[in-house]
Image (tube, rainbow, N blue to C red; front, side, top):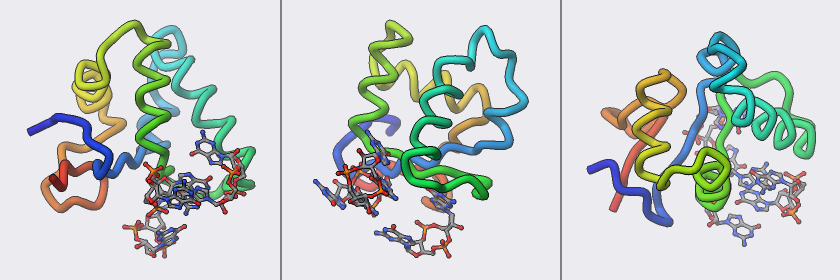
Length: 91
Ligand code: C2E
Ligand code: C2E
Ligand code: C2E
């Protein structure tokens, strides 16, 4: 299932994010950059974010969290969780 729950682990692929067109990925890229700056976490290839942050991003993109998750998988920013390390619905 792709349903977002409190126990869903959301790990963004920053390399994929960086290669997307800015007009679509811009808000997400700015959000991720802000979190990196707040954490002083600049060197990662991936960034774990809060479930609450995905809900905020869904509002920014005018989608439901599940619709945004599907879009992020299409963009290659999230992987549908085969091994659970990148994206997984663990409920
Ligand atoms: P904060 O929310 O007051 O969190 C203070 C510190 O608690 C964080 O410092 C981190 O060491 C720890 N912390 C809080 N929640 C979690 C968590 O779910 N997992 C882990 N591993 N640690 C947690 P840090 O990382 O230096 O972040 C400083 C501030 O930057 C945070 O203060 C928060 O205001 C913001 N921030 C950092 N990452 C995120 C994020 O992913 N989402 C949001 N919304 N804010 C973030
Ligand atoms: P790593 O940094 O060597 O961390 C290995 C494992 O230690 C993590 O596996 C996690 O189980 C635990 N761990 C490390 N830091 C924290 C933390 O702040 N909170 C909690 N609860 N556990 C922590 P995980 O989560 O599967 O991550 C695998 C690797 O993915 C990490 O190896 C790191 O290289 C990368 N990674 C994941 N999230 C981030 C991120 O937000 N920023 C960066 N720079 N790297 C990340
Ligand atoms: P969550 O809020 O959905 O956060 C998911 C993951 O995003 C965290 O996994 C951590 O890798 C990253 N993250 C979120 N906020 C921060 C932050 O402020 N700083 C840093 N460095 N990383 C952050 P993690 O650490 O395994 O935590 C799993 C869940 O445990 C979190 O899910 C949250 O529900 C809870 N949690 C962990 N630490 C705290 C905390 O300090 N305060 C609160 N209120 N909840 C926490």
